[in-house]
Image (cartoon, rainbow, N blue to C red; front, side, top):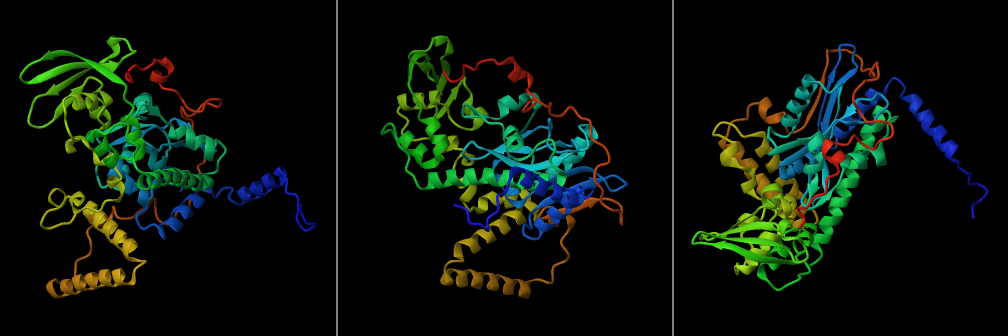
Length: 441
């Protein structure tokens, strides 16, 4: 029961408050965007933010990625999905997220951009800064527009982060200064889901459907979600041919037409080598149930390490390894790469986090650091200023504009192909065809 002092707040009053707040930013929305990222830079030293302005100070293109997104790209940036078909703000600037898939098969955001248009020059600017942000580490594949339906399909399930972002956080009337705040909220919500699945994987034991050692090793290595998809077997086979080099099988479900069974070839070599017409390992980096079935039939006693990609394990996010720094590949005798500096900084932060609750551990860590610094003072001359190639990728904020120009909002509404009023997103030609897949057989 409410007390006399409590006021009844209506939805109209809430709307009036929001309207008043928005009036304060009228004509200053893009200034709010700049201030948002400047404030974030004080707490996130690894944030990357760049904006390209017209001569009058209005925004042409903007790209950003926070430190954790950049770190996620180094772990899961093998495949990137890029799209520009949504209008998520009142100026109709196309929003262009860079999307990936984490070790649980969940969609994650690597960065975002608000663009002037969808011209070649705009995309060239965007991808130059995306690669600079990501230490010039190219993805193995970039999937755009009509190929999205294939690219975001992970372990037989499809998830659209674009639809999630648009429906839950922003709309076509969102102000620019609100948009970047809502973007951060969307990223935080995705990370909460990831951390929840991390917790479940770390604090639960894999439930095995058999006592076979292949399944046991899979349960120990893979994250919980990935392992659950692996153990869904109900297969049989027929032998097609056998020779000294290989055995060919047709593998599939008992109650499914054999025309939909998969061709599996087990190569008779010293190292376990098995291929399947389903090509799941070649596509996703996870062995399919057909290959695992044949390996069991051939009495393979463990899952070979060359078939376990670290990106589908907890190690991909939590393991500290000097091997990942890649000193031999990334560096030479005269210069340390920005990527190596990133890894060393990340390991230093992890060491502090590990030791901060223990006085003895933090003293030990501090002693190691002090000794290292003292040795460096004795052996080396004062370091020269860090070269741009080393420093530019650690943390970066740049506004490409002429000096002493004021920041302005976009002057006109941008006309792009965008998001139609009554659609959640523009469907690709593959999706419109609505063809049923048979690859799960």
